[in-house]
Length: 58
Image (cartoon, rainbow, N blue to C red; front, side, top):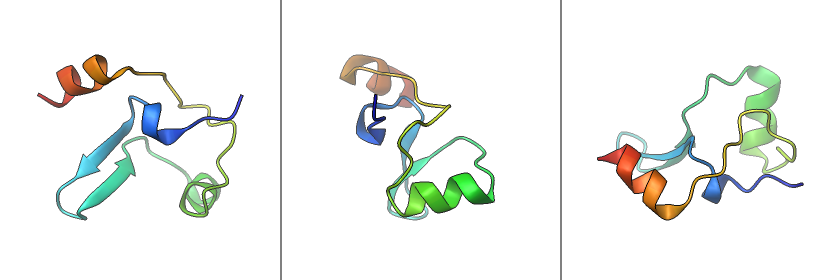
């Protein structure tokens, strides 16, 4: 299953960078895959619906 960051509970908006980022502590190789949109089987992916994600941001 391909992980889609848009549905991940660890993918949050960062106001400092003015974009969405992964809040997990990615190592150098994982960050390279994340930045090039090649992070297919992310070990940190946790499905979150809209309500779960909004509840966590508040």
